[in-house]
Image (cartoon, rainbow, N blue to C red; front, side, top):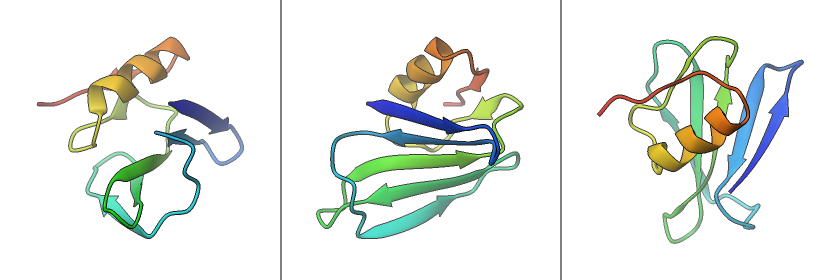
Length: 83
């Protein structure tokens, strides 16, 4: 898993693997952020883009939320995980 942060856009992209080409993108409903999940042809999630990360990041409904939370917290981001 790899994280890229763009402070100008206040956005994070998290790569789940080395696949860089998405087949489809799905927006995940979230009150505080724009959250987009990219999927490959086999419908496996390959990455997540989160915009609006200055506040605590809500990971509810995201694939691999616990792994994402650990990665974000390791980079100093505040995280909310709802079950």
